[in-house]
Length: 150
Image (cartoon, rainbow, N blue to C red; front, top):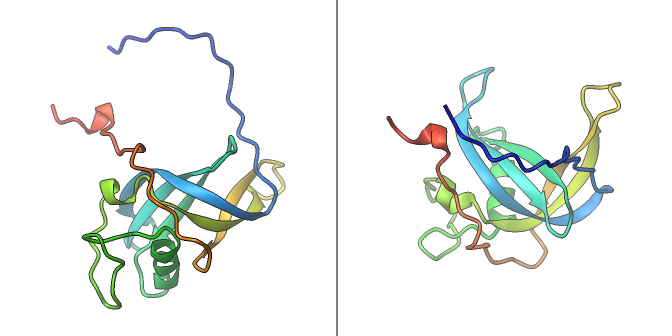
């Protein structure tokens, strides 16, 4: 059984930021398959720079969604072997490659489920024509306790 040291904290409430352009950083990345068709996907947990706001984005590796993956790669200045990927270059994504990436995104507020009054930010688009930002090397992908083999 796990041991825990009580810290007496209160609930954290992450308020959405107003719609607009923000710098976001990938703080967590998980790979999996979509429920509908079993396509490869990448689930991103993002933090809005300078704000106490978290949001999530899912990138699906399909031809129809290739534009979203491409704009994420360009916005976050993802480098493969120290270089920007060339057209038609195969990219082997990993958690270590993605966590810490920083880029510009246009965010909007989504009410989900509809009519619930619960609001959260979502990525509308990844912005590719603003300054390229360096990866935050201090944000690291660390294994979860559940990921450690027995």
